[in-house]
Length: 179
Image 1 (cartoon, rainbow, N blue to C red):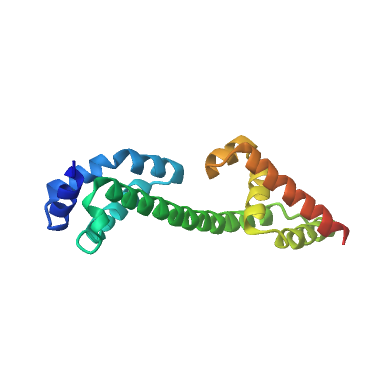
Image 2: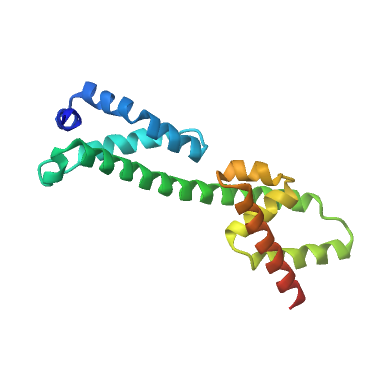
């Protein structure tokens, strides 16, 4: 009945085979979140998190950990929290990379015409008023020509969420442009 408890205790004592058994037991959970993260190395990051969680479970201090269901819940919540942390970090990296690429592309399209430069300055000022998330969505859709479906797949969210964010961003741009 408390099979997991025994395996976790042995893993904490340094038994590598028990640690491998635990990793295989939680492989579906790790695969689920690594697919959602959608970057190379996500699987490894989550396995490292699992190893750290197993090493740090307070088996002796907390009497609840005598039952497997509490150990499973603790591990599940820990991996889920790590997923959210990694997701936020990954979005920050994507935003930084997008900014760099956008500058290269927009400089390429600059023409000798002063009108185009004025338009570019006006649009960049408007874009600065948007949130990072809205800015990212507008750039992907209108600069990089992503479809709403492609962007939804990339961000692991629904198409409806992408459309809502796009429409909010466009409404904000209209509002700021009128001011």
